[in-house]
Amino acid sequence: MIKNIFEANVVQELINRISSLRSDSQPSWGKMSVAEMLAHCNVTYEMVYEDKHPKPNAFKRFLLKMFVKNMVVGEKPYKQNSPTASEFIIKDSKNFEEEKQRLVHYIKRTQELGEAHFEGKESHSFGVLDTKEWNNMFYKHLDHHLTQFGV
Image 1 (cartoon, rainbow, N blue to C red):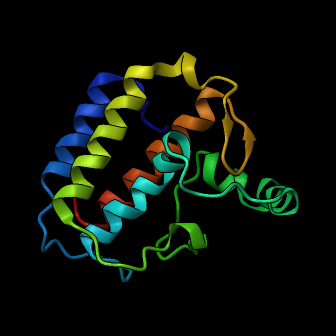
Image 2: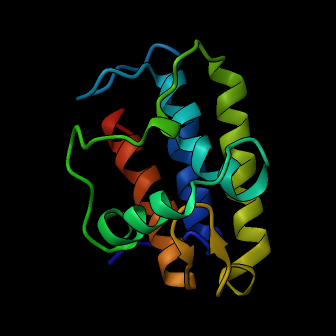
């Protein structure tokens, strides 16, 4: 069962895990630095709250819905070294503290807006999602990468 990112105690647990990261934290797998991982996790929230990532065209959205959506919004955990969508690949260096603060802000904002805000809300890539799908997408991705960095 995936924890509910809309619950204050779950948000606090995530913030505590993020706070325990250090700028020199090393991953158990993968190639990202800790700052890149935080920036990578921020992309999910940027797609919800910012207008900085172009929406995929109709054909790409169809492919994402057919072949990627269930992996992202379902309950099954991600495998280590899973492929990453190009939009989520961090190509430039990132400031660890800045990315950490941005991620905490996004997580808190999501929890404050609450489940009702996300019920039936359209996602950037997958069309309309219900609250459970939004929760799974948000929590599962964060948990995967925090686990990657041992927190």
